[in-house]
Length: 311
Image (cartoon, rainbow, N blue to C red; front, side, top):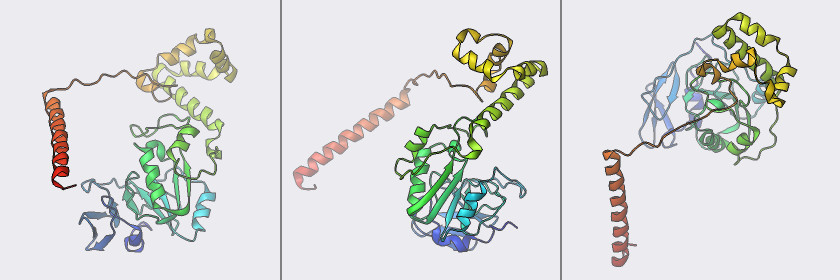
């Protein structure tokens, strides 16, 4: 059994209903809200605190390990005099007693199944939040940032790693690669002390990761000979092709342009979007008319109410 099993009663004071944020009670193997009476199941002794109570989380193999946080941050969390939240923890190798691990699936040390966009914790519960390689996979980072601020105590610390120049990974749940300025915008309601490049994100990782992925794609689509021609290109060759458009030709350049669209999308320089506004059908038109009629009725009611002293 994982070391996280059996923890619900210990961490119950920190938990809140994801629907209304009222306290939860634990009884008969389930959690119930003291405000809206919502009920939440336990799966493998872990509370599943999702707004949609019908969602059944995946249970990952006990031996599954994700990319691990830097050891110095884990040591820092372990030394905290208070609770920390590891948001999007994945499969951790080391379980820290004062750190609650939250995920959307159940990994070996997961404490809570929850949604980063609606954290199932009471206001000002944590002295620290750490989240590594998670925000690129969130559909609404602005909302998740506000939720982190809500559950942090005043003066609480946030440490976050997220993607910038990375190939698509974990599709279709890779939504964002952000610049420093996008990251600062997401966390504009925080006092940002520093935005820096950590050792695991230094530029060598960009070159090595992109090179490995692109070479593998060319070999799979066009054969090893084409991949070898790509590998023979030097960094100077690519730099010259950037500064001199006339160099953007030849077998290797053309080979990359012939990769299937789905392959190119994993590491392209950008995207072109073409879209059409849907035509409003009869039902949409009726709904629009109904909304306008409702507005007029509310406006009329307010005017009449003012005349007879309701407001």
